[in-house]
Image (tube, rainbow, N blue to C red):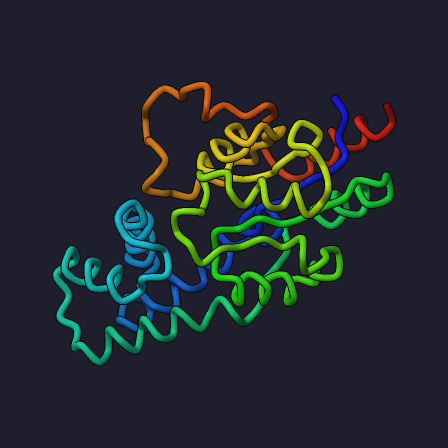
Length: 237
């Protein structure tokens, strides 16, 4: 296998989205008066379940469903305030995933070109890369996003665009993602699919169904540190 390029997903691959999602959830729940630890935990579990139905940024909708499920008596202005505060939390601090900078630098030092592909809003995704200190590793032209929802993963469109900009063929490029949608897009495009699961719920991921070949990655690692060890071995070949 010749590896000339790596394309990275952003959320829960480059930056630790899950950690600030938890801060977001606790902030919103506390604002609604849910402060008892066991109640907060129950609220987080319900929130995660609701992500199968709501977009993760639809805080108002999620909180309204949560208030209904828990039979809480909350004024509309308080619910909106909780949603607003939740939306602000993620911008406070964006930690990078442990070991990811080592992976990026190892690949760079061995002449492997790198890009980014994300379904997220471009302004917000660039802000995450900036605040995490990872923006310095990527040429802006190699950070590919889209405003066309039909071009979002699992559609392979953005991966093909990124490969073209990186000037590499698909079979010599790896895509590292944390979700089935990432793997499907990578496999359709003919890239080397690498999966690092972070167990984020998503409506497009079947919960208990047997995986089909299209959902099966070429490589799967439990975490970024394991990917780093694999890269060390690969670059020595």
